[in-house]
Image 1: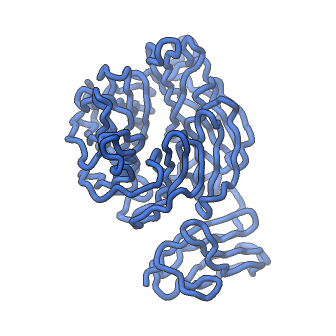
Image 2: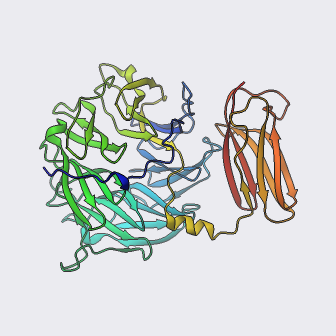
Image 3: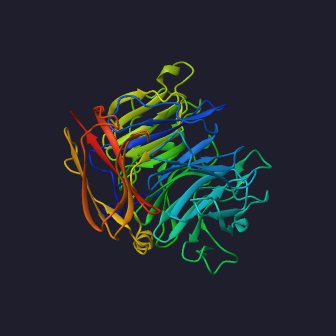
Length: 468
């Protein structure tokens, strides 16, 4: 096993890395039906059974919206707005039988979708699902004709796709080699990482069957399981500057089982879901620089753990419970630095399957430049004081005279609490205040509320906290 030197300066912490907590959207399932739940920041209980969805789904957050990827048997993307979790904005197909696995949104009108049952990467407008094109991935298929491309990670102006290459004709085991396929966003074409070899080459992994990825500056950590039970996988590092694998930084031998999922909490530290020979699941901390693996986290049921998530200084575990202890199902919270148990389980209705952290991600330069080129009709500024206990001031700027503006307050489930402005306003800076009352003049309860500003076809959302 290789020992890798990690460059700490290259790692960008999530935008919500302070002590503040983010709201969580949770996809839940009993594998026959699916649903959703919402856990507001600092709340003790989740709102459950908000919207029925497919029983096999994952989620992705981008710019105030959640994109639910309904996988095998549904083959579509369901789009929800943070202002109303119960009413979909739109839903669009990605092709019958395509089995979408992941979506990466690079601009308001452009997204990429991996489809497990096809040999191409789909490009769509995420606002309405309009097809913009496809990128042929058939060069990476094995003998069964499919490359089994699953997850997407973006580093700079390139996408990296996990290509498993499983042999469907022989028990779905991995073939000779798995890859990270590299896509150039500027040209929507494959990047040949080895021009001296015949055909288009991807980044060959030292172990097969990648199942999770996370970017660390210019490196990508990849969870690779190889064959289940062979202990040949682990956490592999890939250098995107040279488009080469650096080998395994953490081995399955040291993890004590098959790695089924993985997240990073910093430039050197991560957590892996590990299944032992009896398929009992545990969560184990690891260090990339030394390959060291620590003792499993406490309060884990031993049942299936499909997903881990990081929210600033919190590690969140989706624990589905076990046959012996079904009451252990729910979200469990740990200190991300130490692995110390904080609290849980938080009930999500059906058992949790995928956690979506509702926080703004770091915006890459290319996307920021595209957004800046759009004509802006207004700017929503930070409300003050925030938190508040009597009234909150909501400032914003309107660039053009007689712009029709809508300023509304919503509860955390998106229900309208109060309309503060609805009509044309003069150009310039305006400040509206909200006194913590609803449209009937009644005081509302403590908690988080969303402030929405609309003008023309544009929208901005901020959050205020009422504490009496």
